Image (cartoon, rainbow over all chains, first blue to last red; front, top):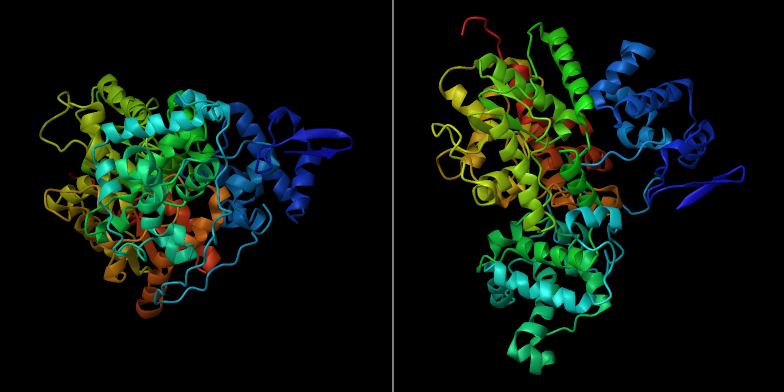
Length: 110
Length: 498
């Protein structure tokens, strides 16, 4: 599968996750979000940015508690929980947010 | 990630047997594994040219290797006892999800190529030529069986459909048609050590974060040791316990128990996974290779005991198959069972008075328990029959004042699969998962309405993830699902003098 933005083609897997991490840019995230009827707010971008930074350092998406803790620090303690993350990413922060961030889909019993 | 297009079944508090809807799930089929997911497991990367002869040869091999398989294929008398016992049939109405029909997909081909009557009078005995259509049907419907073995409880001959599904999947993978979800995961275990693909540095970072979090919350320095040579206990647990909710609260519960009991324990970065998807795809070599990491880690770390965390099929593999796969365990302390379930360990500590629980900490909850298939029907706990049912319940009762069981035809060995077991916990099978959860959700609805149940505890990572995903589809909260050891951890009283 693939999609196109401004003449450039982006390869994805069967579920729309970016095939090549290095292809990612903010337009890609925006396009994926639009397809899910999701408007990306500042807080969405904060999560996406953290996921990308973490992935760059550790080659994996952060565990949920790592993510909630980091978001709590950045956006305020009341937002450092999965309930808030599910408000931002109703299909599940691990999957939906990873997708917008250009990360591969988490695998396993999750 | 658009909203799905299938309809959600209406859930009633009494389960009804649906009318037959032929082909209702004929469209349901998981993504096929690519070469990169197939080859590291020893399977061909794509459909081989001579697939038909490879498939028949593989079937012959399995019939010789697994003595139960020909017995199961020969002994069905079409009595019909199994027809309304499968959660996928009950949730979808597709007659090919009746266990007998699922078995017949393989049985027809078996008769055609391996029985005299089938070779010479195929039509008289329901023998079927192996064609591409048959392969497609196998791929669809052997991925609509979660290998939960509920049907086998009701079969007068004890035919185990799971064994037939495993054989079907094994033949499919061997001709180049494997399932992406399971095979990608097994490849990650071979390469990195766990289903998630969680590498060492991220593992350390995650565990350090948990230590901080727990100490902040309860002011007790509970540790999550990793690769600690000379520890008494090696804990192997599903990697979802490190990654996901509500699993992680179960992991915190185990750590609190070890801490309070003063047991030295460690996790392993080499064997950072209890799950073993080798069983799901029916492949002995991969199952053995995955299990071998645990033996190796136990030897390298010099532990005396191996304890398995809350994971259904991992416990079946450990309890029922480890000794054959990776035994003998003569390097471990014979004073303890090998393997030991974390529930057994906590239960023993409670019996010995080494842990004190305050159920009032869980007074905001009315808890029920979901028996996981692989624990219920594929293993045991403790030293008495039925321990796999009584021990988790005893733990919950020790930690909670309010416990209610669901209807008896849906618990213990009669338990219904969560709908996502057996390698089907993948989004490309979401419709199947939602519909397959219907029988369990129906029983849950009843105890919610009649007994005010607020939480359902489980001891399986797949069950926890599956319910967190599908309960909201039925209007129930994902936070209803809890780990048994979350309840324990929350009720645990920390006393300094031990």
